[in-house]
Every structure is written in C-alpha cells, then in structure tokens.
Length: 226
Image (tube, rainbow, N blue to C red; front, side, top):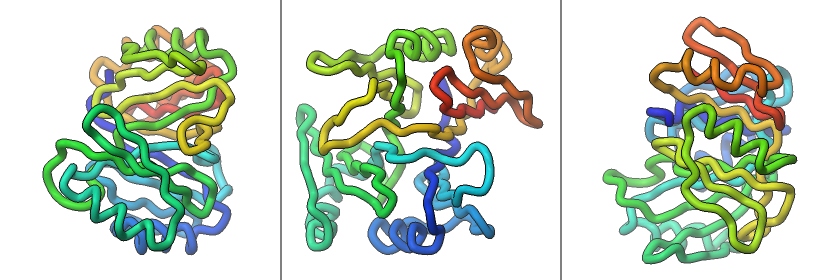
C-alpha cells in the first residue's frame, strides 16, 4: 500500500475559471500557480489543475471524493445546494453529497472522522479500466488489496492506504459519475523498487525519475511513486 497521496491531477480547458471554481465554492487555497498549471491544497494532497500542454495531461471526467469532518457536512450541503443540484447517498452512518465541476468531474464530499475544518483530504479516486480483472491484477501486484467488489456492476474498490482506488469498467455510477481516463496520481510508498519490479512487464511504460518511478498502467493512467 501507499503511505500518502501526493497529488491528483485534473485536465481543465481553461485554468482561470477552474481555479476560481475550487477556490470560491470549496474554499481551497492555492499552493502554486504557473502558466498552465495550478495546485490547490487538500490536506497533504495537491489537487492539480492542468491545461492540456504536457504529458501526463491530468484526468478527464474523473470521479473523486473529498473528506470533511462529519459535523461540517450539513454546512457544505446548505451552502452548495444554493448553486448546485446535489445528490446524496448514505454509506452506513456516513453521508456523501455529489455535484459536478466545470469540466464534468463528479466531486463527492463525504463525512469522515478527520479533525480540522473544511476539506481535509481525498479519500477515493475512480479509474475507468477496459478489463477489470487485468486492472485488479496490476494493482494488487503493486501491493494494494481488494476492499470490496460491486454486486450490481463491474467495479472493485482497492485499499491504497490513505485513500481508495476504485476500478470501474465503462459505466455510469452513483450520481451518473464516470471513472476518469488518463488520470495522473502521485503517491509515496516504502520499498518502491520492489513494487515497481513486480509490474514492469504489465505496465505500458516505467520511467525512473529523480525520486522514484513514473508508471503508465495498462489503461493509460499515470502513477508516480516516490
């Protein structure tokens, strides 16, 4: 498993309105801003907004989930419902709301046991995959474990440590969400070399970086391990 989620990158057509969306509606602060990229602070994770000018590009129509302390959930609902058509689902005793950003990404905000205020982290990222069994084999070889499987649709949730990765074959999920395509994720992990060696033959590419490895999985998603 991984020890932290360093970043999740989303591709945006125009950087300024996308940046304004997340700053104004979700009160995220800017960590850095460049000509074609900006990073917003989500706890220890960077939510990177990236104009289509480089590779990796960032994900399209990605479904991902923010965490917020349970006691703040109703405040988010009351605030966001004034401007968005929200959908809500319950998972045991926890609730999550869903809405869409300017680029068609399905944004979830879910109750958590986190301390602090506001948006405190990212606890789920959904990847679209062509072959579910192949994708599960790839990520379990990297050290992730299966948390649960879908009963009514082809999906598998993997325990990636501080967050979950869901693998979906092409479909509409809750709130009509879709899994992301060419998603770009950065993580930290122990024994990175051992993990990378286990999937070298299955990956589309493996590139050594200054601090670790950048992997392109069989479905074209990028995973950078440091």
